[in-house]
Image (tube, rainbow, N blue to C red; front, top):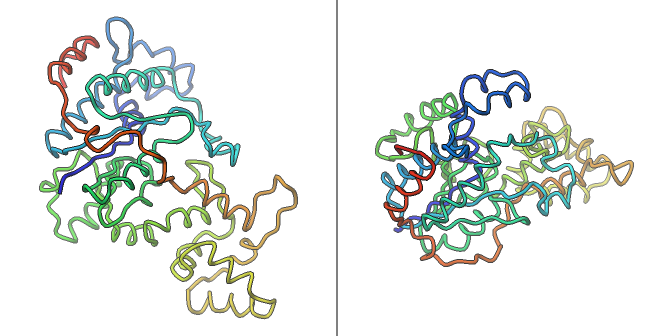
Length: 345
């Protein structure tokens, strides 16, 4: 079956940027000290920063050489002020501003990929994962889908014909290689995956996360997600997985709770303890009432968090499968590399 690789371009670029910084910046204690050493970041003769561009281009070319995908697509974040900020103004609110050398390379990388003829998509309404999810959903019955990111949210997109290639830290990758690949007798070399990439299938998501891929938004609805500042329901914690294994969704969980009278709620918490193994009842946290319109707790927090965590899969796609051909012009690549003083890929 033909293959479409959908790359989270923002995730890959950020990873490449921080992996290829000079030690003076990596070891600096303050942003001011880091900024003093920006001139040491790899750059072209005209001053254009290229450390992330250089590394990302090399990763892409190796990926094409080793995997030989028929189709390739890149999705980028354009802003944090997407529709999710309209739902919850503190969404990703804890994140510091990106450094200037990184911001500059987003534009540079997007333009390079477009020059090479690759499909590149981004806008001010949706995030990269929304575009990736919608593209995967649109074409998953026509080609085999591989989604490449380091964003945990992508796991909800895994199904029978779509796997997630998760970019991991070295220690995490080695842990999964030993506990999963080695256990299952999987030849990592035969997979020919990029460096420190673990392929999540439906079964591996269930084994490692405790829930099936489509339940990832429900899991985040209850436990939250600190990386995106999604609140979740404080006080549920470890009870989330057994509750979702029992009730499948947060909506169904609340239907059961709200159908009980006071006596039945006591029996319900006993059932959770004796049958589901939940030692500390999360009922109080799940049913806490907001004290004001700004108070996000209980059911309100759960439903909002699920909405924030759910990747959209229904955005109209403005191009065809053939528009995502992975072919590129080597002469154009050489011309681009020369323009940015990149001598080798």
